[in-house]
Image (cartoon, rainbow, N blue to C red; front, side, top):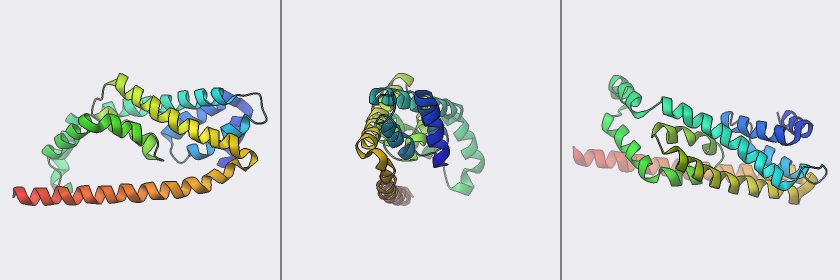
Length: 203
């Protein structure tokens, strides 16, 4: 897959970068850890510029994020309520739980979007709950742009610095990803434990 990605980018330049970043958001197995550093490397031996790569990559990311946000709006809270009423007993989820999660995202969702845009895999998926919670589109785009610009600029700059050794970043990013996943797993476990504890207290 890596060869296919780099060939598309070399052949089509900015358009190839934009396309790959849009696809990366919709299809996470195509990692930005390959697209962005290679895009930075391209600036060292072609006519494309760093700012051009940052712009193309960011526009591509935003296209993917908007598509996922729109999908999220189709899976709104009311539909989740219907599913919960039907299958909630099996999953041990109540309608009240859906409302609590929605309220949490209404309160902290903007920061979740900002931070999420800098976390592998999560950076794509975070747009879906944003749409589900009917987050204001303007603010969603603002925080998405900020998080995306930071992430894109860092990885593209690394690609410029490493040059022909750009591929080495994938090793470090795999370590970064593993650390992030462990932290997220711990957070989920802790939140689930607190949820169960609070539920027992109410009983």
